[in-house]
Image (cartoon, rainbow, N blue to C red):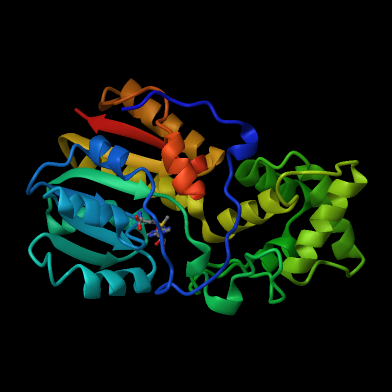
Amino acid sequence: MRAVRKESKEQAEGEPDAPGSFDRMIHRPVMTREVLEGLDVRPDAWYVDATLGQGGHTRAILGAGGCVVAIDRDPRAIEKAREELLPAYKDRLKLMCMNHSQMGEYLVGIGVPVSGVILDSGWSMAQAPEDASGLSFEGEGPLDMRMDPTIRTTARDILERSSAEELASILSNYGDEPLSMGIARAIVQARMRGRLPQTPRDLAAFVSGVYYRKGYRRSRRHPATRTFMALRIAVNGEIESLVQGISGVRPVLVPGGRLVVLTFHSREDREIKHLFRHWVREGWGRLLQSKPVLPGEAEICENPRSRSAKLRVYIAT
Ligand SMILES: C[S@@+](CC[C@H](N)C(=O)[O-])C[C@H]1O[C@@H](n2cnc3c(N)ncnc32)[C@H](O)[C@@H]1O
């Protein structure tokens, strides 16, 4: 696999793209060649795609002769694969709509020997429930940010209920937001005056105002990018699902089985790095490479969303 390319902090996080419909959405799978190499796909062995999405990685594994258990929390992803992939790959594809945080137990239950798992973290804005997302800086709807309507807490709930310290911790831990405490204090003060931002557009303008007052004038991206990302991660429990899912699936891997994780922001990558290193110290496996693999320049040019991707591979012994 290619040597690791250094990237600047500025490039490290994704920005929201435009919301749209799941069916019309075109998703280019990220680092497909590296994912196949990382999984070391062999004909007729079983692999788990823990984030089916538009099926890019699943198609690639099937194309290389592997068999796939494809999981997604979004029923539309499962339905699309049922229509487009299942007829051609009946014997080599199983589809399951579930949170991958529970995939370890599920895989034990179906008794499949797992030779590898790919988890391509995150969501696409196109998946956000139409008007409920609250993920666009221009949004005029409620501050919701739930990617799954069964989740109880909305972004608005977090802004209404959290102390300044709790808010700052969310912004800093999940968004690496440098002005976390300044933004958190401003939100709590606005709340006390009954002037909490009501819509995504309000919140984006509010955070821009904090940046402006602190003397920041220009940025390559919207000042609210990190705040929105941190709130979305908190609302959807993304880090917890990732860690729980990856931890639960490790004992299910066959000897030599591989876990390939693609992350798109620093907090997720840190979690995976520490988890993998802990397992290596315990003597349960080894890393394919100590540093994460990054996409090449050609892929970044072709698919700018890949620029913040980091891929790590763990091999069970
Ligand atoms: C970035 S997309 C995956 C794209 C896919 N690899 C492809 O090539 O088309 C991430 C997918 O993971 C799903 N997802 C996010 N969190 C999940 C979770 N906790 N459990 C199951 N699926 C999840 C989302 O619904 C989304 O479809």
